[in-house]
Image (tube, rainbow, N blue to C red):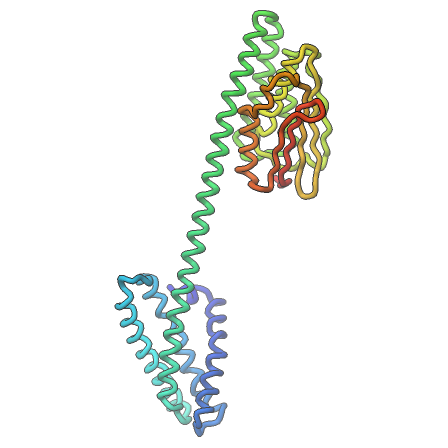
Length: 343
């Protein structure tokens, strides 16, 4: 069924669109010197235009099965030329029938025939244009869906690559503790299990509120606190307006892990990790700072965790995301900025 016929509202709008066409036909007929008055001309042409409006929907059925191609161009020209001539005859016949029914003078047939053929060809062009636009929009939607699926797949791969990396580091720490302090090693295993339980519950989600992400960070730091004790000091400054902002799940954990492994672990007396989050315009800014040994270059080489976080932000937010990492005023600073989306 033609899309216009499938909706009463579309059909009404389509018939209303023929009002200026009817006015034009009446004007041309009256200007050609017809003896009938304007009202009589309109009374004859109105039903004829109503019939012909439905006839001009027929190109849609042909255009759907015969798209414009060089291979079938000749056949289409022949088909639509014949159809336009038949359409002209239909308009003339409809007008003469209406004139006979209401007993009014019939308009001159050459003018109606030419206008009927022209209107049919214009209908053919409009149908092909409409179908081409619909195909273009459909292709754009499919391309957008493909980009979305590719982005989600890449985010999933990035997240899956981080999990083994984190577990390897945690198990290595437990192994080192086991020979020196069995009780602390057991406590670290328990806290690690709690962290994994929490991360598994949230890690499968594409986005989580920032407050949940920060809770995971604190849980991870509890694991590391067992190993480092007083050498690891944590400071936080969180703007409550940021709590509801959506963030990719497990976005901050690799950054904190990096700060501990490549910053605090390299200092004999340990150091502080400072985490701050605040609203900036329509986005959120997160800053992570940690003490580090400036004589080592491990952290400055953009490790796996930092590289993955940067890529996740790029894939998720594109040019709207900002990621900056490097030494600054005696600390190693990582700054993230991205839009604050509700969840």
